[in-house]
Amino acid sequence: MIPVRGLEGRKVAVLGLGRSGLATARALEAGGAEPLLWDDSPEARGKAEAQGFAITDMTRERAFEGVSLLVTSPGIPHLYPAPHPVIARAVAAGVPVDNDIGLFFRSFATPDSFDQMPRVVCVTGSNGKSTTTALIHHILGEAGRPTQMAGNIGRGVLDLDPARDGEVVVLELSSYQTDLARALTPDVAVFTNLSPDHLDRHGGMGGYFAAKRRLFAEGGPDRAVIGVDEPEGRHLAGQLSVAPEDDRVIRISSGQKLDGFGWAVFARKGFLAEWRKGRQMASIDLRPMQGLPGAHNHQNACAAYAATRTLGLAPKQIEAALSSFAGLPHRSQLVGEKGGVRFVNDSKATNVDSAAKALQAFPKVRWIAGGLGKDGGIAALQPFLGSVVKAYLIGHSARDFALQIGTTDHEICETMERAVARAAEEAQAGEVVLLAPAAASFDQYPNFEKRGEDFTEKVRALLQGG
Image (tube, rainbow, N blue to C red; front, side, top):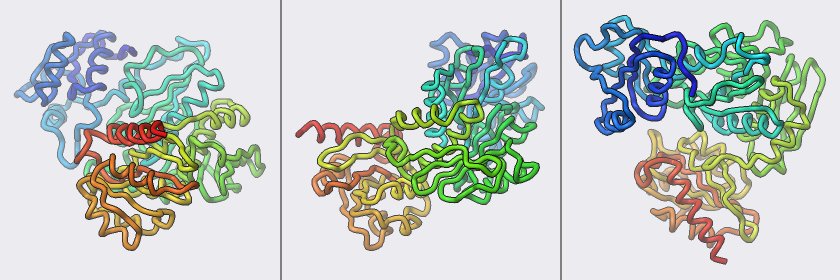
């Protein structure tokens, strides 16, 4: 646990008592503050009371008298589409609002405590940030560097162990987390890419980009790793650079050559290249790396390579670690292989953009898709269906999806069990049975993880069946 600094003896309200909220309450107590806890859910309040915390109703009049700060969980709206009533009450009373990320940056490390200062790497973006975060953490661990991983992946940031000399903490940060944090001072900040998501929460695409951009705004990190395959990334890289040859900004790309900048890392035709000041410094063949299939994962590899190079790792160290990366569960995860057919779990592909990237990673796909469709359905996937041999559609939106995929061969399967069985029965050597739903999971599963676990269980049972 990381005790929160600077709030000793003060009352701090905590709104939202999930994983991050309870960790925040413990960290506040450890730092000498008095946490006042509230959640709209009676079950969440009961869980907090069972852990010894007192509940304070922050919805009542004058609830914020004597309160120095409100710390809110990331999932609770603070502005759009409408602020939570407790947050609105705090703002009206002039009480500052923060989250656990802001508390982390004010509390993690002090310069006089270490011979070799710990470093913090933060990763944000629309797609690939979990894989990039885990990949950076994996590379550092394989190289023997002390490292911890947290944020939107793994542990909550205030549940981390106290900092050690020379340690690197790698944080995945969503737009919900960067939008509100009152302190954001990473040593290395990574922006993977941007595509429409959470627009109601941020008041549109501009607000969404602005929330991501905050990670680079507070004086700026020592190094910025920026994906430049979208206009927003190119704009951000340009704003952060003093000149094209400025090597404090490392531009990354999957598909375009970037040899005219101070520092760049890009992947083309399966090869990663590092260029610095007009010279190629390294090249890595990504094609054999089964944990990083497809152009989208090659972009993740470029981002992780760039971030770890700024931390002093050599190209050969990074290449060895990339080769041993197994991938994350539910994100282009190779579940198994039988008769030349691979089975890949990308249950995290819950929107059109991420499903398109998954489909482009393989030349011949037996595609399992469906669930609770999002606004617009999957009509926008039409240009990316060339690799699809056949689609096996499941869940609430199966029939709607069937109408939106044009002439692509398909079958309404309804359930995961039938979809896996039918795809496996019809698949030929060299093909991939891919779960990339392009939909939410809530019609049949509580979350995308459970959906991916069901796919994995069905596949492994099939593989073990001979």
